Structures are given as C-alpha cells and as structure tokens.
Image (cartoon, rainbow, N blue to C red; front, side, top):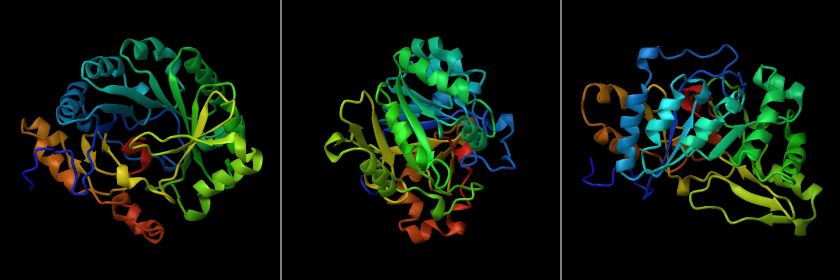
Length: 335
C-alpha cells in the first residue's frame, strides 16, 4: 500500500470529500428501479451499524478530509434513532444533507432544522398519481406532493430527483420543468442505471440528449440558460429565463462524470463502496467491532477505485449483465 498520508486520494488523483451513508435497507415505498419485485434479502439487525458506529466511522472520514455527508436509505427517516444520528453527526464539521421519498418527512421538519440539515433530495418520478402508484407500488402521491410544497415553504433547499424511463415518464419532463416556474427547486432528471433486479436495458433509458430534445422543442433557445456547474457536480444544470428554480440532467450512463468524482458510499451494514457501479465492497464494520483501525481498509478501497464506472468504461460493457448483476440492488446501496 502507498505511504500516501491522504487516504482519500485515489490513484487517478481524485480526492474524496463526500460520503453518502445509508442508514437502513428498508423503505416505505417499493420503487421498481430501486427494489426488485420480489423484495431483497435484508441484513440481520445485528449486521447493521448502530448510531455510535455510524458516528465513529463518519468521524474517521471527516478526520481525513470529508466535508459533506448525505444520509440515504432505503428511507432514512424510518430508522427509529434518526434524531440521535442527526444529533451526533451535527457535531462534526460537515455539511449534512438527506435524501428522502418525503412520505413522512413532515414529521421531521423541526428535527432537521435543529441539526442544520437544509439540503433535501426528494425522490419523485411522476406527477401523475396513478403512475406514481405504479412505480412505487404504493398510493402515497398526495402526501409526497404536499410535502414538497411544505419543504419549500419551510425554507429548505430542495432538489427533486426524477429517474426517467422510456415509455413511462419521459412525457412529464416539461411538466417537471414547469414546477420550477414558481418554486425555487432544482429538478434533476436521472438516466436509468443498471442494478441487480431492476430489469435494466439501454432501451428503457432516456438519455441526456433526449431530455434536451424535449426542452429545445418546448422552450425558445434564448430562454434556455446553461448554468455554471459546481465543482464535482454530477449534473449538467440549466434554467428557463424568469423561472425561480432550475433543472439538471444526471447522465451517469451516456456522459459519466467520473473524472471529477469525489464520492464514497457506506452501506447500512458497514461496507464501503468506492463507486456506485462497483460490485466490490470493503468491510469496515467488522474491523471497527474488532477494535482495529479502519484507515488501512479505507485507503486500500479508495486506491482500488476504477477511473470510470466501476471499470465499465464503455456502453457495451454496461450492457453486459454479468458485469452489473453482481452489484447490489439500489435499495441496499443507498441513493
């Protein structure tokens, strides 16, 4: 192993300052692109990180340069000790944010505010109640839509994540963009990505180019503004002139943003994934429970990171099922 003291720098010179922590594998929705129809094998409770272990691991990452932590799931807010987790992590010098499906987020407004969580990524794949019910296998559209407006009213910085699937919701692209006319939100269209059990194929994907074709057909060229992307941004950002909010495309499949990737993922059962697409994992939790240092494992995992998409550096490789079927389902990785 390298003697490099910066354990969060990989062999391609990328520094990893952003840690996404999955708190739970369970969810109160059953989105088809995230969870296989038959469900997933959940880790036994004893295999999941306790709030103390989440804090200890996070503290190690922060010591080595992590400045942003995002909490994900499953649905992170269904974890019973979420207030304690937020309280502990809020003591670290990081920007703390959360990804939620917003089904029960109205009950946590005060808790989120109390611990400085201002940035919320809200998952919402259709503005049509029946389609929402179809994709999530649950009839919760009305509460999610109401909570979107509540979060904006309460002053949260809200991003709405929309996974696009051909023949299902690409005809709602303009409806979603029109949401940004009077709401200061960012709607982010995400290319459908392959994970175990989600029946992915390239034909179901709506590409960045196709999204922009819809935009260009609906708005005049002079009203479509290309915004400056933030450093390490995964999205290509735009807004319509005069609209309060903005929209973006996350093109992990057709235009991967791997060159500037600064993200690492920690699963709810304490496994470090160096890339969303990677099928390999590094067990931090067992080592932590043995009272040993997790730093050598972190460094080894970071240095093993491929330059592009877990080694799937072409669309041809991405379409090879055996290369991504060994990966987890999205529900057990964390959004």
